[in-house]
Image (cartoon, rainbow, N blue to C red; front, side, top):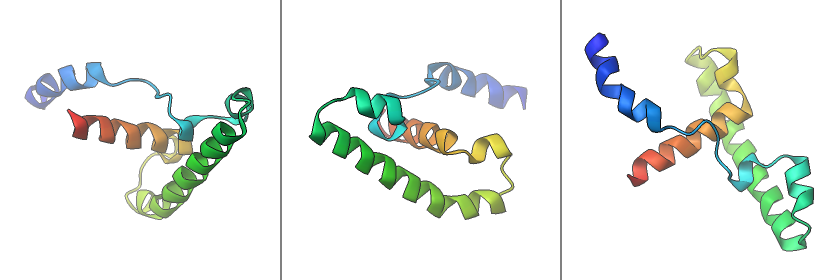
Length: 88
């Protein structure tokens, strides 16, 4: 187990605590954009991300993930982390 943690530590240190993506924007951030198209794009990104999260929610519950990992914010973080790791 220690060997596994030793190898994964550099990867864990590079993970960001959050991402500045449209799907993670809240109501205040969306309103601050002030441009109709930007607001529309943000709302669409949030809607799409929530749809994907709802589709995965049942599976995540079946996997018996802890409640903090079932939240929408946790989904956004995990989804973006996965994409970042694929691009490296």
